[in-house]
Length: 524
Image (cartoon, rainbow, N blue to C red; front, side, top):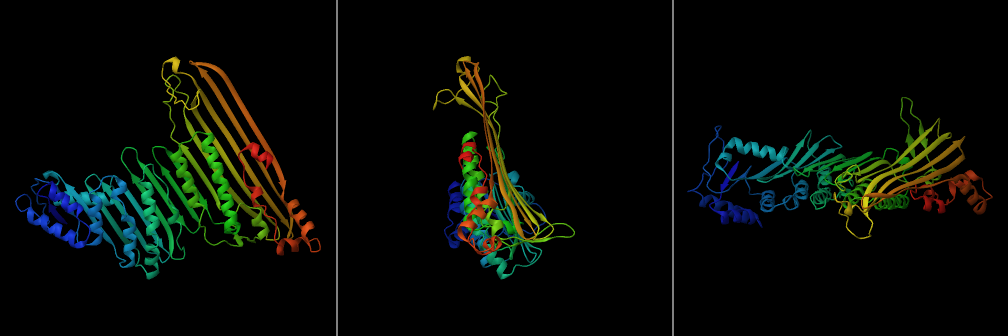
């Protein structure tokens, strides 16, 4: 433990802000120690088992260890600032970049003491421990290597303290491990910067770009704030990815299953499907009057988790005591979305205070979207593939009768002029492919979209109209027929099976994508 006492506010500011070089930090610390002989004791490397009490007349900075290294310099600079964005600026990247030269554990913290009651060795140790484990603002990154080692990185910040910690356990780090860890520095810092931004962002793509043959998993957990707390739980490994984030605006919850790599499509195919989903997410947000910042977080996380899948495959192994190995072809993938299976939801925090005269009229927004695929059968020659996409939007909100006029509903009936919307939309797309004795015998996609809009109109508190408008569209597309038609037009002299195996096929992946707008689906 290192204690440095300020002789005055000016000296404190000098210590905290003069961090441009190690020499400056060391010099500032020496000046602080020299100038405080009359106001407080300065203890460096305290080893006494008793708990000495220091007399505090001015704010004191207590360092966990010697503050002469570059990381301490960065901590000192950041500690002079307020707010999580400034406190954590650059720290995450610096801790991971440290692995380029050092693969050992590390711990450092700085605490500002402002009263004599805080100035005991025991109190210092307790405060340092809290910064590393239960700080008001805590970020934890946990990484497991393929060789079995584990790296835990912690950043903690409170009103009177800032700390960082690196713990390497369950093995030592190889050169490849250290290089891979350092390679996550930019992604980790971007994730931190996003979480501490106002409004928060979910910039997680950099944490999915790692070599799974070197790093087996990456987990990021964060808890920021004590009143309007923002939380994050993120996980990524070779086969699964997930993120759940909760804040004042609502909750984002997404999980991706990449275990069926045989169904993953080309980069262009994945981009097409991702853009289609993002377009429908935008439409759902607009139709349900969702919070813009919450929907932005949802789209950011959805994009990050459904990008950079890594290698695809051609073989799928079924589960069970007697697994079956299925070999999938380009024809199969051509009739799929190209994305990994997923479940995703975004739920806005309900607001019941919009209309004090009718508190049961709650402003809500909830949207779920998913994709699930199954591969069954007795062998590759007799295989069945099903891929189902679904979405469900439920929302309710108030809107002024006068476009552009801000709604201000009170208990006064003269203010009760508004529309109350209730939205309930569903969409589904199910692709089915069947082979018998190696021949493609059936391939089709069933699609449907249903929108329900319920609008109640109130004028001076009286219900003037109550209208529900349904829109329903469904259709079936014969994918096998599309392929047979292309075969007959382009290569009628070869067998249909040879055509599927050796010729460039028409792109059918766009036809299977779910469409949530009944009007668009009808004309698609």
